[in-house]
Image (cartoon, rainbow, N blue to C red):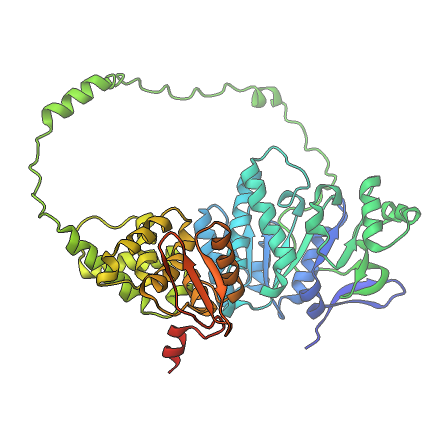
Length: 496
């Protein structure tokens, strides 16, 4: 649905229309020196679009709170904690309520922190609540400064990050940024550059006029026109308004700000006793009651001596002796149970370790929990699947000693090959070795075989039937011939 907002009168007497739906997709930047009519323009836009779209106004001076009486906006006083503001912002998106975030009375750093928390709450709302919302930020140079000022770096980064998210990534979340600034030179360029619609008002400084002309696609010599604009006169450009620079005059508004431009007023008659009124004695503040100073804190030696005197030794309960063989067997059973899941081979060791600790607690495995390095070693040994007499053989013990000198991630592959050689089994296929390595890439498995061979750990050869044989010179054993291209045994049996 296309909604045309009446912004006033364009050059030539035609109505100045703004396509609200296009504005929600392309964002707006308003620029003009103090007194040029920026707040009047924003108020006109907010009043005209209030029936059509949810609105949020970040108001540093409390000028827009008067919208509440006429259009039902909810005024949010920013003198709250940052977590409260974030929660309120989430609820605002959930219930689709138009709000005015009043930052009046806070110093600049507090305003930046509160605005960042509120904008962050709007931005981080759940996907189910990404309804269209017009987010108007007055005096945007305060919240997205081009250079560091007197505020802390933390506050500046928080505020600048929230403004960048609003203008750069807010569109997909339904947030349409409308930012107004007195000076383009003070506004961060990456924030200003994301706007596609511009309304440029009266500007006097050369650097601001040059940036305004660049944004509107005008020649530098035409930039002088911005000095001649009257209050409430703006030059518009953008897909939501005009494809060419279009001068316009902003129409009247129905509400007014609590503060207004200064007007000349005659001075009141000076009272005869003015001197006495001004220089009347200032009442003295009540003197604070002096209290006795607190006793000095005890020294560290006194505290330690007191702890020694008061501490009563508690007898430690005797822990039952742990049968190490029973404990190792229970740990091996837990790891075997863990590896029964066919997807376990492709999970990271950290994920498997967390699952292992939970299973050990469930089974009440005695003794202290196995450390991560020891778990990796156990995991590689159990994956090889050696049991019975083979596990006690000298050849397998030598294979374990050789594997301990390798990196943790390749020990499992080495032990799978060593087991096949010690037991005289067929050489594992590339798919089986890839699973032992935790990958689906058979090419990585073949490269790992080459890596083992280059280090003299094994020798790979092919027989006359193109079957692969892996020999271990240090173990005096070799595998039976095996087809390198055969499917993974576990995957094949699981599919069957």
